[in-house]
Amino acid sequence: MDPNDWRRVIDLGLGLAQGSELAPDEELRALLLRMAPQVALSETDAQQSLTTPAGTAALVREIHRRTREGSYRLGRAFKASDALKAAGDIAGARRALEEALAAEVVPLYRDQLRAVMDAVDAPDDV
Image (cartoon, rainbow, N blue to C red; front, side):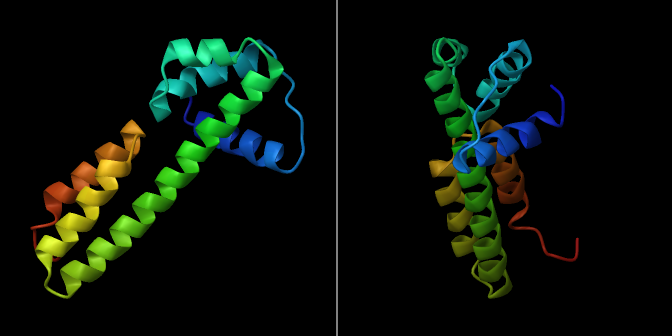
């Protein structure tokens, strides 16, 4: 997968939100088929969405929504976890991460949450 794919879909989603229209072509189709599994959407669902211009726009919006909401969720969880850990509440720090993990569907974001959870008990100076 191209590392710029995430940025391209975010830009497409922002464009749709501002009233831009999509130019469905093979490049857009390939991009969305690559991105769908990155945000826990099945290939079947993505392919079905790509059969109409409205479905394609809906797919872009959904991928954009999942990346945006997941990113915000991670930021909030990391900030809360750091604050709780700094206050000496390791259990609370872990709980903040667990709650975010329970709500998260994007595999990359889930992996990031697990990595931070694995280190939550370690001292900050390690």
